[in-house]
Length: 178
Ligand SMILES: *[C@@H]1O[C@H](CO)[C@@H](O)[C@H](O)[C@H]1NC(C)=O
Ligand SMILES: *[C@@H]1O[C@H](CO)[C@@H](O)[C@H](O)[C@H]1NC(C)=O
Image (cartoon, rainbow, N blue to C red; front, side, top):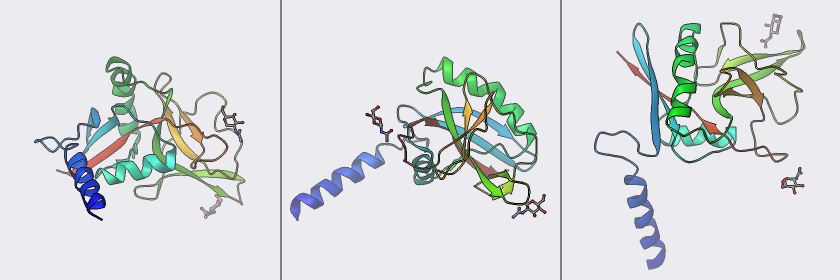
């Protein structure tokens, strides 16, 4: 019992140490911002850890963020300016792809996925720049979304830890009202 309490205590200390005095998270690197008409977004990438999509979703939440979404084409074009640069220059390009918060839901009528941003359940409103060969076969592992660091294009990627789904880096966002 005493041991459990000690471990819990150490865990809390460990978690608290993730927060620096400015309230920014030392586990993440700030890679860029977007200034909308009445909101501001800041994007973060974990410094040294990778995850499958589902876990990335949860990790962003647990740090008070959301898995990143480029809600408008302007946001996406803006992200193209910093994604590759940040990830290569800051040497945090640990995987080729970075999970973002998009998910494809199959529509029977048109026999195609319709893609949504999960943080607000809104359809992606602009043409998606898919990487060559993507989206590929749809399977029972769901259709989540990742963005390439080098090509600045999207791919579909499995959502869950199945079939050796590989862990990738991921991008979280923090949205603030202006
Ligand atoms: C599926 O697609 C059809 C045709 O575009 C559309 O009318 C329908 O609302 C869609 N269903 C859903 C659940 O989005
Ligand atoms: C998962 O990956 C390991 C190591 O690469 C491999 O040995 C194993 O067969 C794979 N399992 C499946 C179900 O693909």
